[in-house]
Length: 440
Image 1: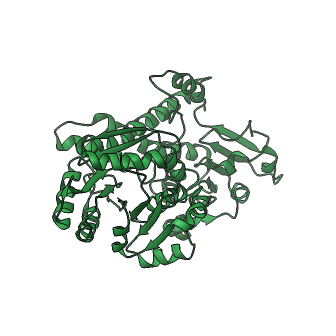
Image 2: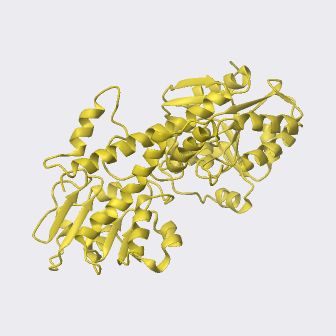
């Protein structure tokens, strides 16, 4: 093993690149964050950052070791360069590696000037076969061969927005696809020093690492869809409770409790597209990915089913309130969120809608515009609504107490708790409380 890595560069300062830079700096690395967006770099240098739990703490701990720049030549002062740029989804579900290729072309040109060993690690999610293409690009532009003063690794992140810092510092495992042994050892040494929980480190060739990354998210989404199917069945059987059933199932070591619950479907920038990419991977090699396709159908059904449930309780003129628009708690990301999808479905069905989210209001306004009303608080949203649907399990919502809902205005209200987060039964003479996963 080489001596402790002291300097790292991160190319691409988005919602993963910035937290990775901050986390590395907080653990003692000197980090250069590089992005081609000069406005973004200027904001970071002025101390203006995106919302992410623990990010501010890491930035404070590592501020003396962290800098931001648009100058790619600064990576020459570092030992490892992480590349975290977008790999947009294509119409067939595959990922475009155009931006990664562009980044590696520029990095390769810079590395022509460097004589000492340098590892480039691609963090962006790619499909099987992509890393060999990227290796050829890097070798051509750098004039070097991997294994000879240059190394290339595939080191995708297994994180969730809202838990990015925690997931970086405390991963379940580290995945390293390597072009050569020295590159893998260099990256392994960094993670031994960086991670706080001594995770398992799996080193392998590119193709196995590429398959592992895309397969993991597909397996997790399959578990989510199973839990939701279980919940919908329990709702139709007297005395059934999906949470009770899932707890028992999860105690079996072959199943496990994580992601096994009856609530709503998955969303965000990773799960939906990774599942479609897995199906695409299967088609390309002539193997139908039936389980992945069924998982997607179940996920798409959740909003359709929830809309029908809301309509079964609500009159056309009733205001429908939504608590939560982000795809999960502790993030402002609304991409593929079930809350946004239900809002659109309700609008299309001509229902008046009022929404509230602790941090995603600004992002949602860009999409929903003046087609919905925006509440000032969770309580204000409930007060305006005849039917309230809890779409995202924010902690703020779980702390809501029954007496806060006693408006004494004579208005009949319904709360549909999709995540079983409200404590106790909120039912009263003026309130009906429906919990998903239990008999409806």
